[in-house]
Image (cartoon, rainbow, N blue to C red; front, side, top):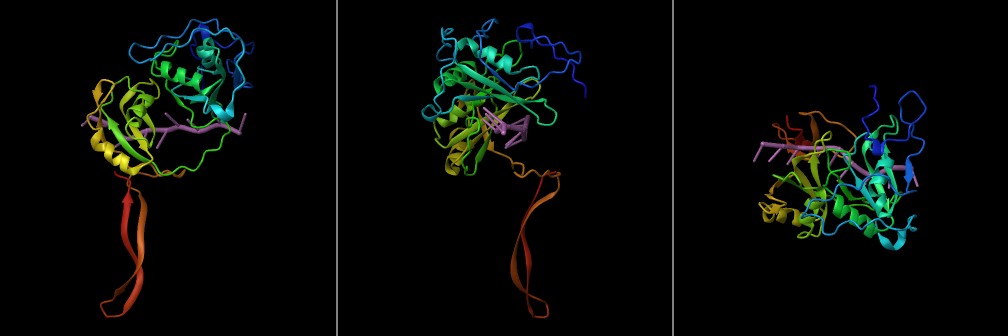
Length: 291
DNA sequence: CGTGAGCGG
């Protein structure tokens, strides 16, 4: 379909281009911090969530070199991005901290349209954490929706180690202001094996649908949490916890509802009506996608 | 009252 240039607020408009097509050029996917922003500071976090305000604008003009080896993850994952929110926009938001190194919006390899998420790299783990704590869940500049931030799982280009299985629970009755991070921390404080949490949101509005998921590395903690955390407050509402419904199969395949997706058989021996012994496959169980 | 899909060269 044709994409019209989005209604970008002037503060974050890309520089005017001379081409008539109205198409964005993407030869530069990475934007790097270069100069102080001329835009207004972001919306302050609401009372009661931010433990500390964002530090005032720093005097330093250039980011200090990152210390990859000793400092841990310095990148944040950011989701629910609108089409017009480019690297320039992301950097502009955090530039006043003087601690942002770069931003990247992930785009589809074929269509080059934004996939709705990106990464922001900071000079240090601590700098990233300050942003995570103070901006997560508050309103994004020039947007109706809220920041959706989390730790990037790994730094750019880093290998992901083999992960064990996930044990997931469903969490319903979530208050509207509950973010992934809040949900995750609510459980992680009690269950060390918590790997992550996700609040399901409407892709277009970015608003919570009121439920989410928490993933555990340890099955016992998953099971315990289902009774222990049921009815516990997260933000302002008691959570309602249940088992997570069957996940989609993990391969790239798609399955239709009603389709048989798994069969389990074993080779057994049985006796025919005539008394002879034969071997054959016996169906033990199968699984269908619910209609 | 609702069972996503979200990790980059």
